[in-house]
Each structure stands twice: as structure tokens, then as C-alpha cells.
Image (cartoon, rainbow, N blue to C red):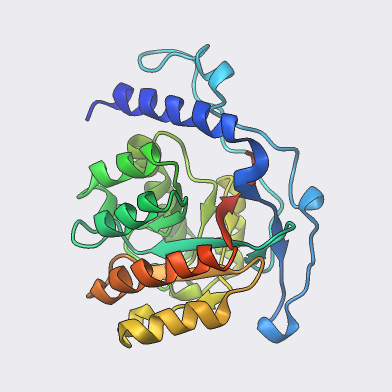
Amino acid sequence: MQKDQLFTRRRMLLAGAAALGSAGTAGLVLAGGGEETARPVVAPAAAGPPARRALAPSTFRLQPLTGYGPPRTPPRRLKVREEPILQISGSGRRMVLTFDDGPNPAYTPHILDTLARYRVRAMFFVCGECVVENRELLARMADEGHVVGNHTWTHPLLTTLRRKEIRSEMERTSDVIEDTYGERPQWFRAPYGAWNRAAFQLGADMGMEPMAWTVDTTDWMEPGTDTIIDQVEEGAAPGVVVLSHDAGGDRSQTVRALREWLPHLIDSGYHLTVPSRRV
Ligand code: ZN
């Protein structure tokens, strides 16, 4: 896949997304502590600097796709958070679906097929070392309107690494995402949900917001398809961010469960969306 073809497809996608307007996105809520103490800390309007779309179609056409044009704008440094984002704000029954650790050719295409069947956009927190083996899956995510986030290169426990090692894990991954997906990620997620101050600071330096989750499907434990379905359906609520995995083990239960619980949520009136930062 040629890079300029990727960008062309991405540009078409963005044009389509712009036509959708704000109906397909939602704001953010920071929450502290566990679910029992979840509370709004930052209102959407205060969650960051004014919205900006680096690759908005109108401005993108003014920039060269390849060659020796002006360098890309470096990522803006964001406010350094002390906690990750745990859920989204906004009115209505909105939820965000996230899939970690991929892409993986055995499972990710099936998940993408199910999302496409129900016209649902989701977030994929990918590992750089998986991306280089499966670049076409990142291109497909771009084509189909999904949001790709940074989940480090090798999925280490960041709290055991030196700052420069964390930086390398995150930077390399953002670079390969930009190269395959068409734009740098605006979100990152620490492996195992193990955050530290360096990770928050480096993420902010690279223009990424830290996103955790509200409901863990526990699919990483391979507990059985029915258990995964129950976890999602019992945890469903407005603003919830759902954690699933499309790699890192046998994810056939995840694939089967999604085919069941996704239409159930839609039938219950939930709108599955992606966050609105810079959109
Ligand atoms: Zn992970």
C-alpha cells in the first residue's frame, strides 16, 4: 500500500466524518478512583486547548503529500494529567468500545467485520511491533473510521522502565501509526493500566491524552464467551468505556462475544461512538 494512497483514503474518510458532524462523537470526563468514586473532574470545554484537526480536509489539500514540503507541525504539548480518562461525558446513552494489543490477523479482521456490520466506530490501542507486521489492518481501520491509539511498542510495564525507555516505546509507536494510519495518535493507553508520571508527561509532550477504561470485559482471562457478554451488558451505562482485546492470546471468545453483545447494546438504545477531542 502506497503511503499517498493511504493519505488519499484517509482524506476521503475525514471528509465523510466531517459530514457526520458532532453526532458521532462525545466529550470526555475525567474520573478519579474506582467506579464507586467516579466523578467528573474536567468538563469537556476545559479538557484541553481549543479543538484542532491537524488533517482537516480543507487545510490538508494545501500541504504536499510527499517530498520536501514544510515539516509537519510538531504535536502540541497538552496539560499533564495525573489520572487517565476513565469515561466520556455528553448527553445520551453513549459508550466507547476499545480493543487493545493488536492488530492481529487472526482476530482483528473479524472484529472489524462486526463493527462494520453495525456501522460502529471504535478505538484500537495498538502495539508498534504488531503494526509493522500488519500494516494493512491499520489502513483498514483508517478506511472504516476507527480511532487508533498508542499502546507502546512491546507492551512493557512502564513503571519498571527508565524515562528514555518509555519515550522510545511511545515515540516509535506514534511514528509507525503515522506512517500506516495517516496521522499521529491523539490517545495512548499504558499497558496493564500501569501509569506513572513520566508516562503522563511524555504523552502530553507527544500530543496524546491518556485513556483508561470503565468496564473490563475480562476477555484477557478467556473466561468464556457468556462471561464476556455478561460483563459488558452488566456494565453498560452512559459514558462507559469498554476494554476488550484483539490480540495477546486466544481472542476467539472476544470475537464471538462481540457478535452477541454489540447488537444487544444497540437494541437497548446505546450509541457506540469515539471521543471528540480535536474533532
Ligand atoms: Zn494491553
